[in-house]
Image (cartoon, rainbow, N blue to C red):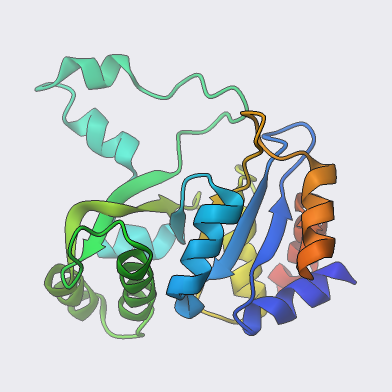
Length: 232
């Protein structure tokens, strides 16, 4: 089954291709476990996917550590900057929840932060620090020591109950990490086509076949999640 192959690929640090739904974004994201990210994998996402490279965080640890949704931060600043209130993301055409965007970060040892090496360092260190298993106060201290914000790695926070009220790539790919038993932090990037649109499913399937990558759909992930969740 493709779900079993996808989970094994994730455990081995390989890139997996995740299509959401025909009635949602109709897009495929490349995803890889953040703990296994390398300069080479960032380059592949940048060149072969070409969308926005982002890194996910489960809702509860983001809340515990203090990594906000960007829309909440903007709303809290709207009295001083009224335009931010006017620009609230209340009309996302494929989603009835607020945007999953969080803050942006760079590791303090990066230079510009945008190079493949810099982003790989930021992402890998982020997963290591955030999921170190240390007390929250220590994680917060290490986050401040190791990272600056804003930066060039976009963080995404999942919804509170993964794959219940929101079924975006943020949740789909984070759920894959959880089911694979790796650190629950996915790095994702949308696959763009040369025609100015997202790559079609047919184009992605051709790419998957050519490059020996696993292609999996949102429906397959949700079905596996329903079986997995009661055990955890």
